Length: 407
Image 1: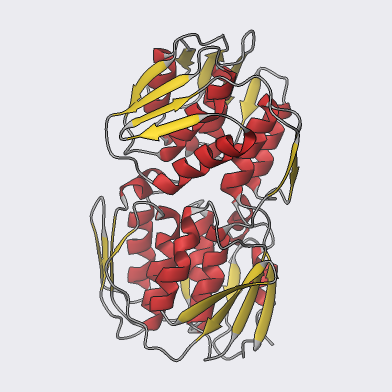
Image 2 (image 1 turned 135 degrees about the vertical axis):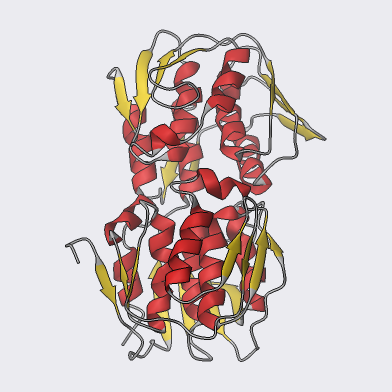
């Protein structure tokens, strides 16, 4: 093992009867609001995510140089491409990690070019790094596929209020991860920006000024998923209290409440947070379509494997263009552990496990969610998480919080 690998063995340790976890602000909300804060400086933000992705985005927005490197931060790449394309007089190169340079961005770039943007590919057509020559975008209508990544749509919507003629998006396909799109629209509406979304058309009115406001960002539901997984593997009546969560959340991953109820975990909204309580219900998971919440797929699959129950997940087509091909990564690592698993480009089927092999080395593929999704398995068997520090991409204090769950 190298210094970044982490041996986890909690199979013989007891979980505390009540555990309190503090999780920083939603990465999704933080990233959107940081961009909007640049357009409307009278927004004040509290409980901003401390994830690497958000830190990269915040630093990039303050960077006045002609080269901006956002590392592995995919959301930052998409949001900043649109943001800088609409900033007149600014020319820069936007780049990222080697994996980021393999992640497609042509659909967003083509949409921005329809609006009049000047963007050039520095190395490979369709991929970062990008040379962006910022200019005023006067065209106000664009066609774009909605079924690839909602982040492309959100990137366009976030800059729409600053466009002189506003923006009309015509979606050519059904929208993927719709809750994230609706989050963007809700944030715009809450700031006083007029938006319309009907059928396959979204329209944003230009907005010069808004009222001053302070936003306390809700904690990240994707980060909560790992503790839902731990709760599902804990003894009956174990409680995990997580702050700060709202029952009327904007985040699509709030669907964890309903999904993990099927896996024996009840959720109670109380005292500005949520209490997860393990029940004695037999876990059984119905077929799930995760098109609107693909980021929790890894957590759910590993939970089901640990519970030794089957699952069938669909709507997973965007997982192939994340930090890694998450479907292939799940198949590789779960097979090491003894799983029988089948994946296609859009779905995953896991059979009920008859055994779980111990002392396996889990590769993380530069993917924070691989590390955190597999961590709860250490409650069943010893495992080693390779490159464990990758979790800082979205959850800087994950390992400290994880260890704090045990006596």
